[in-house]
Image (cartoon, rainbow, N blue to C red; front, top):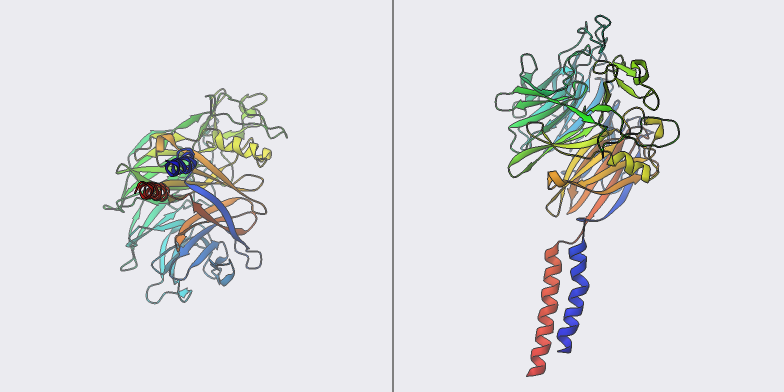
Length: 498
C-alpha cells in the first residue's frame, strides 16, 4: 500500500508539468554571432547546405560561407564582377544566386554554385532573368527554381492632375515585374510570368503609384503546384499556377482598421510611447511570406511591413491632409489618403490568410506593445510603420508549426515566435532579443543532427546570429516514465503480498 502511495505521489509531481506546459520549446540559446565587417557582405539572406553543414550568407557584394559548428568563415565569394547579390537559395548541393545588374533596370542573372567546391557549377551556370531579381526559391523537390524579378523603375511616373488622392502615370523606364520559372533539369528559363491581363480580386490594390506590380517574395506550397508572390508596394499578392506557369489572379489585401480595439498604434515619435486607436487605416503591404498546410489547405503567413515608392514620392504627412495632433506627423500614402480618410503603409503586424486572401488571424498591436514592454520599441519609428515586421520563417517542433517573425525596426534585434498550428488561434510564445544585433532581414531555420537552428541575418549591424531551439520532451516520454513508475510500484506490492 505504501509503495502505491509513493508511486501516486511521484506521478502527481509529473502530471501538472505536462498539463500546464504552454510551449513546445524548452529553451532558446545563442550558438554564435559572426560579424561581416571584414568581408563587406551586408547580412541579408542566408541558406543552409546540409551536405557541407555550412550557412551561406548573401548581401550586396557577395556571399560569406560560415561553418555551422562555430560560425567561422570558410570562404568569401565576391560577386561584384557580376553585379549586386540580393538573395540565395540552396538545394541538393546547388547554390543559386540572384544578382541584379550594375544598372538595376537591366536584366539580372541567376548563377549556380557547387556547394562542395564553392565555385561556379560545371555546365550551365548563368541564366538571364528579369530586372532586379530580388528573391529566389526552389520547389520542395528541387525541380524548379522561381525568381522574383522586382523591376523597380529608375524614375517613377509623374503626377497627373492635382486631385487627392494623388494619381501618377506610368514610369518612362520601368522593367516589367515578373517571376522567372527555371527548369533545374535543363537549367533553362521555361517561363517568365507577368501580370498583363491577370484577374484582380480583393480590395485596396495600389495601381496609381507610377510603377507596375513588383514581385518581392515567393512562397511555394508543398506540392509544388502554387506559388504565392507578395506585391508589396501594390498591397497585393499574386497567385502563380505552376502547372500553367502563369498568374491566375492578383489579390488585393485590403486595409486594417486602427480604430478597432486591439489594433492601436503610436502615431508620434515624440519620446513618449502612447498607443491610441485613431481613425486611420493601414495597408498591409507584406514583405516576407511563407505557406503551410492545415487540413490539406494552403495557409499564408505574411509579415506586414509596409513599403512605398523608393523615392517616397507617394508619401506625405497626415497633417498635409488636415489632420491635427496627435496624427499630424503620421506618414501616410498620398495615392490612397484624402482629408478625413487616412491610409498608412504597413499594418504593424503579421497575418495568416487562406489561399484566397481572407484573413484568419492578425497579431493586432501585440508586436509593437511587446517591444515596448521589453524596452526595445524604437519610438523614432512610431509615425512610420512601428516595428516593421519584415521576414517570416516556419519550422516544426514536436509536430507544432512555429512562425518566426523578424522585426526590422527595434532598438535590438528582435524575432517573435508564434505557435500557428491552429491558424485561427495562433499564440505568442517568445521574443528572441539579441544584444549587439540590429535590424533582422532574413531568417532561416534548419535541423542538424536532430537539433533545430534558427539563423538571423541582421542588416544594420551586419551580423549573423545562430540560435539553437531545444524542444520540450514530448508527452510520450513522460507517459513512458509514468508507466514505468506504475509498473515498479505494482511489482513491489505484488512481491510483498507473496
